[in-house]
Amino acid sequence: MFRRAVRAIVPPALFLGLTAYFGWNAMQGDHGIHAYHQQLQLREQALQAQRDANDEQIVWKRRVASLDERALNADMLDERARAMLNLARTGDLVIPYGPHDKLY
Image 1 (cartoon, helix red, strand yellow):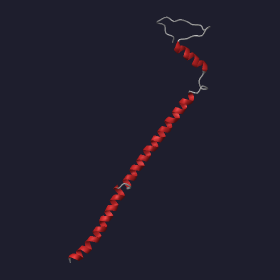
Image 2: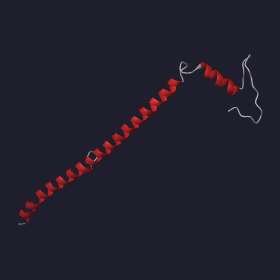
Image 3: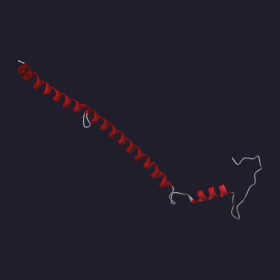
Image 4: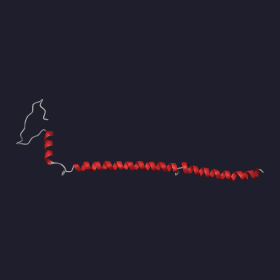
């Protein structure tokens, strides 16, 4: 009777244990459903970082393109350089301002 009980209980218990083990690994294991969802979240974060980097790259390309010598107005550049260096050409008309007078 003991053998009959063991034969009736052990195989189903073994198969239930194996089913539980594989079921747990399918959900919680390294390649389970939870790990898959984590990988999807990481992928979405990486794609967002790539989009942000592309946007920043476009901004920097536009800034660099505006530094091209064809994009600069030579007269405005010359005027600004002279104002910053406090220089004048021969023949320029210089109007002195008082110490408390403002240019603008």
